Length: 416
Ligand SMILES: *Cc1c(COP(=O)(O)O)cnc(C)c1O
Image (tube, rainbow, N blue to C red; front, side, top):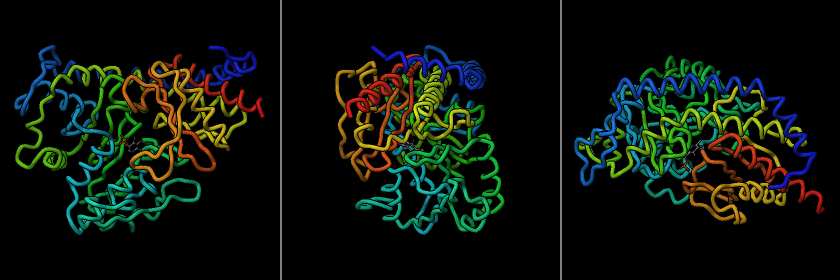
């Protein structure tokens, strides 16, 4: 791979600028790896837990211990960790349908939820089988002009809520992820205003980016995808729901069927991958965070608007880079794809993805299809042509991807 001298010099400057941030990330990594290892030890994870079950999967010890290890790490009463979750959206939908009943109210207090959740809630699309279709009411508290949560209006907004929904990561918006310090303040207000409501946090992209998880600062339920942070790049699919025992039970009943709940669902041959992925997750998340910080610094040095700033406290692995034109967006994605381990030879094209309301372009040369803990980028094809970059199984391969994207971008500029 060939990079111009100018670009390499700028990259070297970027790496000097981010040294201290890397130290901070490594400290979080060490803390979280210790947390994970201790949970494995306490629950006596053993080779026998990797044995596959088939059929109903009654008494699948590996599945049960995996749930226990997740709850230990997230400090929850219970967890439902399953490779059968098709995606993060599926896990989130399971949680919401598990808890909410007709006429109940769900209030999202972090502005518009992640795109795919719009159809789950019934804000967009045919709405067949959506929460709205089942008679669940939905309310949303807008963010303030500076994209922060409107703390003062929380008490009034949530007073009739059954579920208070918080999205930790910014998703396809340019708001920064909510740090656990801020999350605690937000949840404290929610608990005071609506003590009976369940606080559900969409934790996608957030796991292991800080020392605490939302469940440690008051969330009743947290939900995420295993092809993001907690799968460590090894889990081939799946998701998790963790939190209060009674809520997890409701989710399990929705996930399988009332009466059988958590007791069925054969692990087939997935337990080993899910345990191993969890074991690697804090390290892989740290690599993804480093890749993100490098990209944020490099692209701001190149003169692009980025979000968050490289030295902000991060609570997810995403970076947004505003590329300002469709051509640059395509060049960025092509460059990133060209430095991916899988399918490096293909050129990403925009397409209409299910769950999204405009064409999306993606660079995703991953071992696991669509896994965004691996170096990947996606962008809706609309002004201001912001690309969302995430992942990186290792820092140096992530850095190569970022450099390749930057080089391709420079080449496209030089052509014009
Ligand atoms: C990824 C993600 C989801 C779920 O998306 P899937 O593609 O279905 O896994 C939900 N919310 C946020 C913030 C996400 O990043």
